[in-house]
Amino acid sequence: MSAPQPVHQRILLKLSGEALMGDDAFGINQATIERMVAEVAEVARIGVQVAVVIGGGNIFRGIAGGSAGMDRATADYMGMLATVMNALALADAMGKQGVTARVMSAIDIQQVVEPYVRPKALQYLEEGKVVIFAAGTGNPFFTTDTAASLRGAEIGAEVVLKATKVDGVYTADPMKDPTATRYTRLSFDEAIGRHLGIMDATAFALCRDQKLPIRVFSIVKPGALMRVVMGEDEGTLVTA
Ligand SMILES: Nc1ncnc2c1ncn2[C@@H]1O[C@H](COP(=O)(O)OP(=O)(O)OP(=O)(O)O)[C@@H](O)[C@H]1O
Ligand SMILES: O=c1ccn([C@@H]2O[C@H](COP(=O)(O)O)[C@@H](O)[C@H]2O)c(=O)[nH]1
Image (cartoon, rainbow, N blue to C red; front, side, top):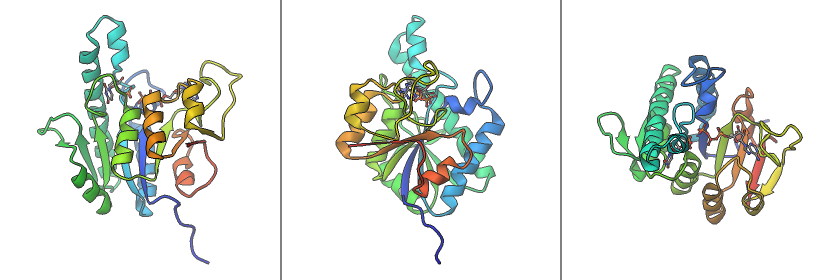
């Protein structure tokens, strides 16, 4: 009998910046990033093409700067730069685990990382390299969830996998409402209409329009990413 095969050949993995903190209050917890990278490396090694969008919530969010009185666009650029730091740390950790990664930034900082060029990203993926998209969409007032939807659609990913601290989409934020229950599956229109805060409406709407499904699952749960890639029931599926 042949070994089980992955159900996805090319994925866009959105990694929560906040999850990189582990149990720390800020920044990147080394053991946590190594564990997350080991999970990504495992799926890359079975031949799945992996593109990553990394968040920045462990370092800086524009909304926090804005509410503290900063110019919002400036604060958002700071947030985007935070994702570049996370991307560099991820690529470094991948290299140490024998996975070749390339960071591509939506903001031009060529001394640090190469710019995002779609055909080059596709070439890297076909070569089996992990591509890490940094600096979100490159525009203020957006989020890295929207960047994940955008890059996912651009590279022809079969699914956006949102890897976060919670194990799916709930009827309300499970960190605030202990009575919230988890959906196994829901539509984009339900997610948008019910204002489910797990992702922003722009990210959901872009995936809906491009018919690109999203699966939300826990990156804290060991082996969950591999189970998702193998088509096992994990987290919440959001589809048209
Ligand atoms: N309906 C909901 N179902 C599940 N989680 C929800 C919901 N509403 C709000 N959340 C919250 O959304 C959080 C997901 O945030 P996450 O940190 O992955 O996203 P982010 O803000 O895009 O990431 P980053 O840390 O990269 O900024 C969860 O930790 C959870 O507390
Ligand atoms: O396209 C984008 C993506 C992100 N930002 C800013 O970066 C931070 C961190 O991203 P998260 O999605 O919150 O992890 C975000 O709060 C924005 O300030 C952006 O401006 N444009």
